[in-house]
Image (cartoon, rainbow, N blue to C red; front, side, top):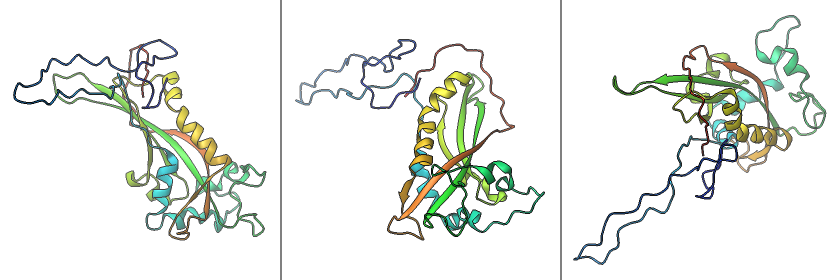
Length: 240
């Protein structure tokens, strides 16, 4: 299960009943005889296990405001598909037939499309699991980086690290099972549904007043070949 960072400090996992936060250790410090200042007591509880998460809606706005990215994402409006030739993901039958919430083609380039100021973006998802060792004496630590690439970018730019939208890192110390991974992906999937159904308004170089409407669709999943971490642990994974 995954829980927000601002969860109550006494919250336990709904699946395994394990506390999500560490019990604060009692302070052994005593006030100095020469000072009236009381010892500092840490009020913010520390999670037992936690992993970083960054919303897609935040990253996509920053991505579009980088030089050339907004123009690249508009390429579906002028792209010409040659029958029988597949040179890009947008040439495939799936991208050509996907529907938007209004029932029209998602990547609609027709002159009579309802909103000419709406930008449609396709994403591909990848998860790269890996393990690393800090020292020869330390045990290995496995984690996984979950990220999205923007399909409208040229292929030579699509997978450059600066163009990937990294949404989360697995907390470790073992690689997540399928069930654990689905739990931690729940927040991202919920956001993707919002971005598909409602979209967001954003300020971009072409629309500095925030009048561009952005809708996003998840097109495919791929796994990186570098995957090499494995786990034999069956312990529960409850994180923030």
